[in-house]
Amino acid sequence: MKDNKNIDWEMFELLEGGMTAEDADKILAKINGSEALQSEWELLQNTKLPESKIVYKHKNDLLKKDTRILAFAAFSWTKAASVAAAVIIALPIGWYFLKNKSDVQISSTIIDAVPSEVITPDAMYPIDEPTQASENVKSLASNPNDNVENVAPKRSTKSMGAVKKDLVPHVIQQSSSNSTEYVSVESTSPALHVKTNNQPLKSLNIVLISPEVDYLIPRSNQEGGFRGIRPTINSGLALLALPFKGSKLEVKPSDNKTLRIEYRSNQYAASAMLSLKPLKN
Amino acid sequence: MTTKEYNSCVELLSDGIFRFALKNLRDEFEAENVVQNTFEKLWVRKDKVEMKTAKAFLFKIAYNNCIDIIRKRKRQTGMDEVSENTYSHSEQYSDTLEIINKAVERLPENQKTAILLRDYEGYDYRSIGDITGMTEAQVKINIFRARQFLKTYLKDMQLVL
Image (cartoon, each protein chain N blue to C red):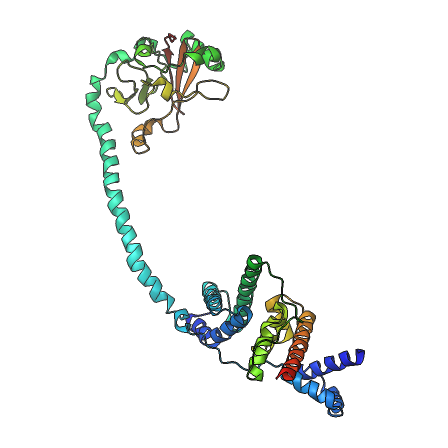
């Protein structure tokens, strides 16, 4: 049995060409000396797979043309089309923004129309020259969570109409040689008001505090109760708010009847107090 | 590899890849898909594949494709691999070539792959090992077993005929 296995292996080696010439002669002599081995050797030689004519029919589908030509063709059509589409879309948008931006500058003379009562100049004072009022504000700011629980239930789901009547704006102004900014709340059209370079007051109805206080002042799950003002503007109109870029407008509970609105940027700080009318359940 | 070299690979090797896939899978449609996938991968990586290694690259990709398909089939049918000793003699064969082809179909996958690459493509044991992930010794023993199986099959068929 072992001899059979050995001869099988030797014949396999002979067939595969893995033998030296000397060993090959020996095994061939052995095979020739036995009819049984000759038959086995003949069969083993037939195990060499014969050449078969198998042709892949779709060869032409695999062939490629020069890639540079293809790349150029792709560029000329798709790229050109996409660039054209981008220009068509971008032009009116750009025009719209430019128009809006120039409106802000050109209409500065119209700003006189903004009701002066929305600002309480008496309440203004430089933040870098502390007064009793600013100290009060600072002390409020240091304890923003005071009476959060008292304030939270008073967030109104009803119209802001009732609340607006009780708004008592107090504005803190940082002195600046170039510009002056105010934050205030007016009864009819709450807005952020800007005055620049001693130009007439500019009203930007973009960062709204009301009329939907419940919508604009979302209740946060975090400690602190009310925080932030949800922007109601779209990103395109936000261009108009460039003077406030990087600034932070926050609403903090002050006491159980008042919310304090703070606006801070690198240069300016302002705040306004909003008195809330308790809800009638 | 340039586009011209890629195209010459298609001309020279697509028949061999197709034959290898067809013998392994016994399904013309799937074998054609294997050829298409294989050359698609070569085209995608043509910048990284050199002409001299393209043949081995192609057969390796084709082999892996075939293995994936065979495994998928096995999962679907739940059938065990056909043992090298289990074959029937119910078919009628006209000549040795046909008998050999039928016998090759019955070889276990690793033996079949090894002997196909050896006899059709003329690869040495080491190259077959590179393609299939087997060692040289494993390749050699698989080819030995495949030839023993084919020899026995031929002997039995001669007795039948």
